[in-house]
Amino acid sequence: MATSKKTAHRNGFKTSEFIVYPAHGVGQIVAIEEQEIAGLKLDLFVISFEKDKMTLRVPTHKSEAVGMRKLAENDVVDKALETIKGRARVKRTMWSRRAQEYEAKINSGDLIAISEVVRDLHRASSQPEQSYSERQLYEAALDRMSREISTVLRITETEAVRRIEDNLTKSPRRIAGRGEEVVEEEGVEEEAA
Figure 1 (cartoon, rainbow, N blue to C red):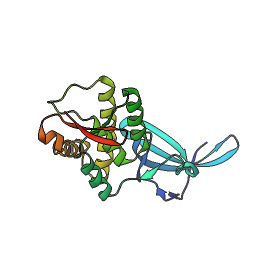
Figure 2: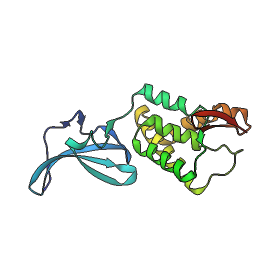
Figure 3: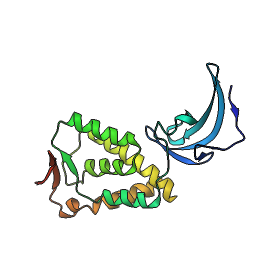
Figure 4: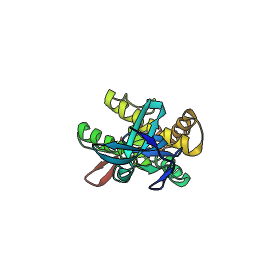
């Protein structure tokens, strides 16, 4: 049976605060509850992910271990938007391996790592089509990035996506319009035509 705690602070987090939970993105702490589970009393963060229509309960003492963090500061948002202006860095490895790496970056909860996935998987209209799995990863990264940026900057997700896309079009490879990208091979970068 859950009972609401009068204290609204735990481990540096408080109720009504927006946070980032690595596996799910931006959520809001709607309550801090005490529950008895298997005879043990646990304090839990009740986190609502409104867009996903999901509620998650995280033991307060596990928040650091699971990577729960406060929203990024404005300077981190600026760095993420700057990151996506850079050249895509695509390793010459099998897609399945790169897909795992991209998924790990998305689920890390690190805004800069997520922006790298957006940068690397973005395709301009003049470039070849993406595979279904590439598109899914790109959309997941774009969604995570836009949700955090919209919450930090207090703008709509649509406006956040527009800012991200505006920065993507400022990328050197997209300005050049020649479809060039940077390819990493064993730590050496080269330009691929």
